Length: 328
Image (cartoon, rainbow, N blue to C red):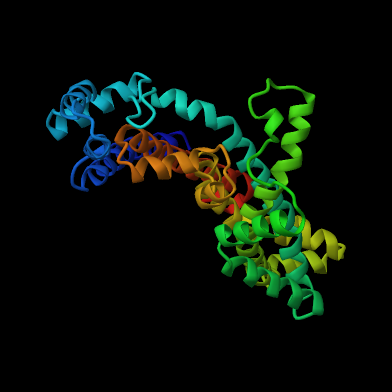
């Protein structure tokens, strides 16, 4: 197991270097850069010192250097904990991500809890009561959840809340708590606003996990070890939850590892943009649109790191849950 972990960590280092380099190349592909866009804005306003300002900024951020020098400098500083400075905000990338990380983690964890609390019981019920009325209803709801985009659902709920209910569902805090220090009242206000974006983000994931859980459990319940458990006289509930579900849940663990940790940083970016949520997802999308390469590159690297760590943790959890994997 130790050799396996060390080998996976070695592959992870190579993957992070490749992804960071390719991501840096892609960000640099469009003609011009952030300062080119800013130069056009200054010219449009009639600023006569636009050229000199842009040249000073280009030298400050190192954009006048060759591509490999820019990438190498950023990568070396990244290892030291310096992620560079955002062109758009003129602030360190570390500070920008740190400000939004807490709310991103809270929203991602709330989404995961809602998704798994709903998906596993509903998937098990749908498999055990196959072709029943409840199964048909759950299947229909699942397909609707899979088919409807999260941002579209957010727009529908936003319109209904504002126009019909006259309620403000934008953001994660009321106006009086946005800049207020943390207190019991601010936490309660967060919980009042948190469930709406968490539920919207969980809809698509819940529908997909219900279908996966149902299909896997139906296949597992026909396995010989399940029939043997029934032959020993175990209660049907014990056969399902202690034997069949324990094996059928394996793909869900893999999905959790590959999606949960990257979701902590990325979240559902489009939903966050629609609902004006202070998470990292909208910041990343805006950095790509504005060619803010140090901010975008840092987000891409963190996505990759969390994806690799999530996959490794998923493999370890699978080995702990399923004895067959340990023996293999």
